[in-house]
Amino acid sequence: MSAEATTDERANILLVDDMEDNLIALEAVLGSLNEPLVRARSGEEAMKALLRQQFALVLLDVRMPGMDGFETAANIKRLDQTKDVPIIFLTGAEDDSGYAFRGYATGAADYLTKPFDPWVLRAKVSVFLDLHRKNRQLERLSGEMGARLAVLEEQLTGNEPQDTATLLRQIRELRQLVSEGRGY
Image 1 (cartoon, one colour):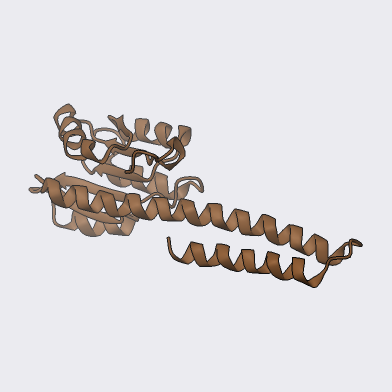
Image 2: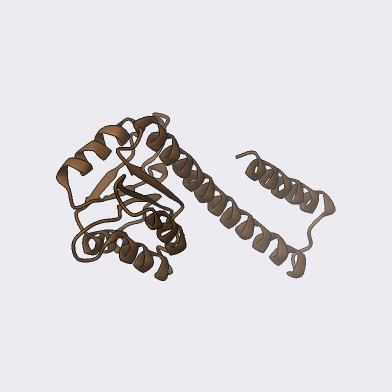
């Protein structure tokens, strides 16, 4: 992330695992991304965190006491405010091979077995962070375009006489905004 990035551009990552050692390992691997890493030690804690703040991504352990990873993912995907948050499942290599299928069926974006390659995990997380930032940029551009179009529409339908040159300039500005949105 660039030094001039604002707090709005920072992308929270939720780390969900009941084992302290696993959380420490995830923080060590992902710390160099310079994004806020939020811990949850259970599915219940994860759901509370997701309701309090927005996350770009959830790294979710499959095997946890109480609400396991699959149940947590199902709950995440059920809520309107969290349904689009990507989930990467993490589980031990000795786990049942059917877990991967079950994870994807629950709505996971990816599935990795432990021990995982730190470079691979960091690369996958980076892709989701980039996607998150691009989606946020698209939302901002869309909002700005909507506001400008509303003003233009009001000018066209209102009683204020507008000269053609002014209207053409405003249309060109909107086209430029659309063009910038494509280049993100």
